[in-house]
Image (tube, rainbow, N blue to C red):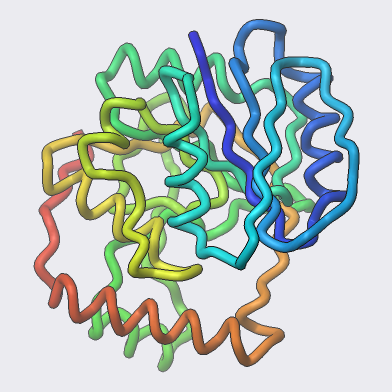
Length: 249
């Protein structure tokens, strides 16, 4: 088992170090092959990490979510590639079970259940967005999410959020990674569409959970809202509601 972790910091070096500390504590030696940390803006810090090799990439200019993780993937050596937000907190080792699920069920990508600091399940697993669903959300405030009724079985959703995505390396290569035409939003939805279109399944393991200490910048700064809207328009124009049908097998 060789897992590469890709973490991108936007001035979040303190969170990155906290995540590295979690990894040192809860993950057994040999599970993680390497960690690649990308600084999207200049930061001066010497990270402490004992579990595996650590590489630091620094961008001369700011890049988007897709470009950063694709660049890390090109330098990665692991059989599995995990996209991981700095604001993820680990209480247990998620990788052993997730990798076993990928291998056993021939998955392209898998994610854990994402919970907030209070243990409440976040809406990180959703149905493909459409104009109709967007209008419904604006009117009712409701998201098209899934309920995990059976915690013993894998669940096969339309898409999962990009805060934690564990890919089989060959599957990531098969769809050429994330679409770099997006800057910060909808990259996760888009890659899930393309995986499903190729018949490469994604799943969520209800047996594994991680904590997301979310910082939703799109609600705080106008530029993030603009990036969000631009990505949404690009996504709708690209697919025009033509999505693969997913059966929860």
